[in-house]
Length: 126
Image (cartoon, rainbow, N blue to C red; front, side, top):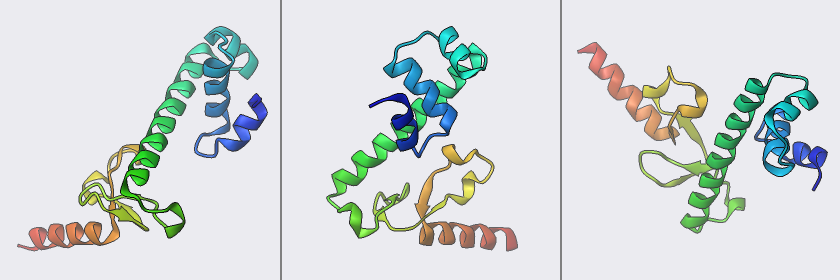
């Protein structure tokens, strides 16, 4: 697979993240050479590569979790609830994580998120 094909297939990454990851991890070029090829700074290449690596690891972990459930992907499963550990066809961010960046938010079943919001509302009205 070449760099352009990888960048097209890596939908979970930005184009720059995919390019940085490919250059550093597959082509094995140094950060300075990658920076020159990408017309950016070496520190930006580091940041892009690190972000890509974290996204790839998260995607890999999600695939492993879904595989472990025995549920076929064509059944609409998009992930596992962070609270119940049950496969879900729809997820929502945990209400307690609203101030966190999206990539750090725990994803829970929509019904769990609604229950938590209801509990929080009840606590505020008392």
